[in-house]
Length: 294
Image (cartoon, rainbow, N blue to C red; front, top):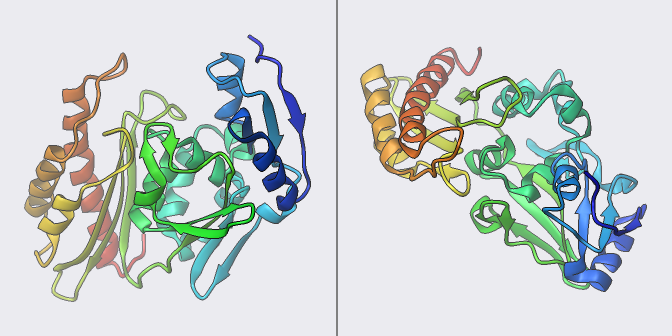
């Protein structure tokens, strides 16, 4: 299969990218790693008149720490994070999840920003930024910078609130809480496949073992990554144990309304949500009780 004809640009700076978007608007598509856009082009599910390739824009490819925040340029490759030896100390939930993103060849090309803008509800990055309450930095020519929360960024499956002239340039992840536990679990038919359901979890416990903070972000359970906020609230102030986690998982199952498809029915995805939430909470609690270590 071949894509429909398009005009190709490969700018080397962000200003030129913004100028091109202003000029071509809805007729243009940005390409980062191309791991999501490429197949859509080949199958002609997307047929833009203009492709703007971001890969030569060096100003969008960086990873640094600022006052404890993890700051990622939109062109940061998945494999760059996977190979970062100290990422597990800074952001252990991200470090644990990145190897689940497709296969190594995909992670070598795929970017953080590309995954977020593609907004696939079965992908890992939307769930991560949702669980960690990251800030998404967007630029538009002549209008400066906007800072969006995940709730403000994701609209529905494969759809964000970005306008045609917008560019996601940066992701800012708040500092990791001292001693917090975490877990990332997902179920797929084969390693590297999109998850049928997944869970990104962060859990804080006090010295008595009571839950002080709970984050549950669900993959594949709806049109966007879903925060199981009722389950999170249910956990607050309660002593962490298996019975509590099972009850919270059942509550999380009532918060989702997944669509069925050829891979799994709606009922199966809902059941899988409860199984994985309970499992993720137990693993996160174990790490929290161990002072935030493995």
